Length: 68
Image 1 (cartoon, rainbow, N blue to C red):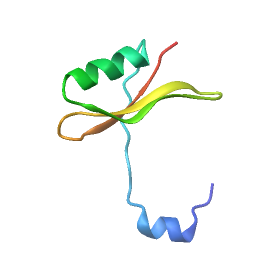
Image 2: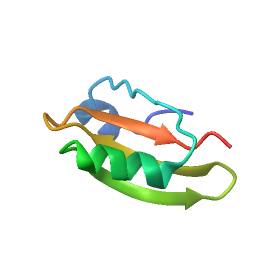
Image 3: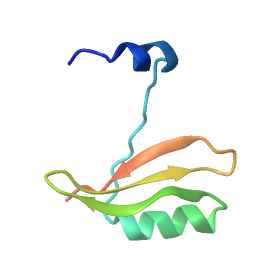
Image 4: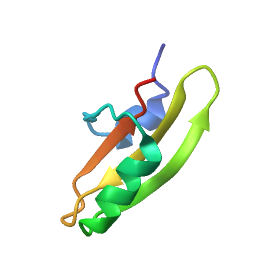
C-alpha cells in the first residue's frame, strides 16, 4: 500500500506490542486494579475479534487481543 506523502512526513516509525489474553474484560479489570488504564476500551472488530488498548501506570501502551 503506498503511503500518502502527507502522512509519511509526519508519522515516525511505530512498533506495537500485543499480549494475547483469554478474556479481554478480565484483563481490562486487572490492568485497572493495578493503576493502569484502558486507553482503547474493549471492543469487537468484525473479522478480527475482541481487543483493547492498555497502558501501565507510566503510560506504556500495548494491544491485548482476546485469544479465542
